[in-house]
Length: 59
Image 1 (cartoon, rainbow, N blue to C red):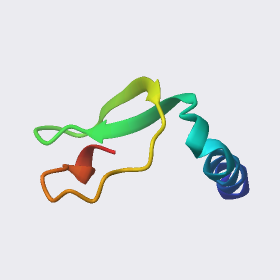
Image 2: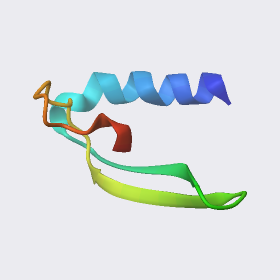
Image 3: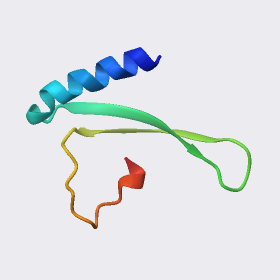
């Protein structure tokens, strides 16, 4: 699994200047009970800005 993610990340780094559309699925734990939910986000991949107001906890 780790190798597959590494390959995808490497490929994305090669084409990041084209701002490709990507879909990312991630797990959000529930703070009130055991478990949580999976969320899926689709958008254009870009390099994050280093501006201090960016909230990187949601990446």
